[in-house]
Length: 115
Length: 113
Image 1 (tube, each protein chain N blue to C red):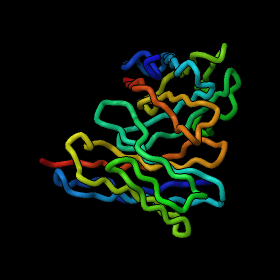
Image 2: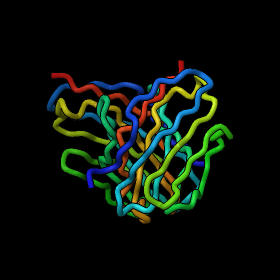
Image 3: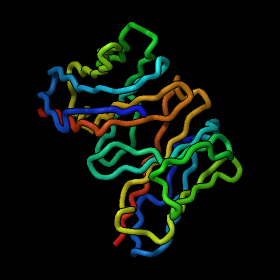
């Protein structure tokens, strides 16, 4: 297991298009998190899963955003009708159930540019 | 709601010197954890050090140590013998028990030769 993988690394899309990102967590980790990071800022929480259950969604996550983790393994984050304000780095992280002892392991992120 | 504040957007230090990054937080929780993460340029975020709020002893990891002042809600990171590879964004983060990580705005640290 080589850590948390995110695909694609970069995505350029036109305003109004839909985009989907994928995250493959560390296989033993049952928790998976999505964060959004804009330039020069700290990551902002979007949503998280424990196994296949989505346990929390941020108010930042408008109805254009949806995330799934269908079999408790990989996750996808879809943004519909993208807007320029969606341009950001989207980070995925995973952790064991006891995230307080181990912290999160982060992926390298997907950088989205909406033109 | 919990908040994390890092008041130093940028800092610089000479190689081999010591630098301290500041972090304050606000919470009404009694059981929580604090973290420092490092994000090198164009690379993924990695955990530097972690502190449990119920432990009075400050955490240390090699050249990295923290000064945890629970009453003041302060959690600073000290980097000793700074190395060029320490150049990165550093994020302070808070997690209540069973909760999620909440990050500060970050401090961009430059280590100069």
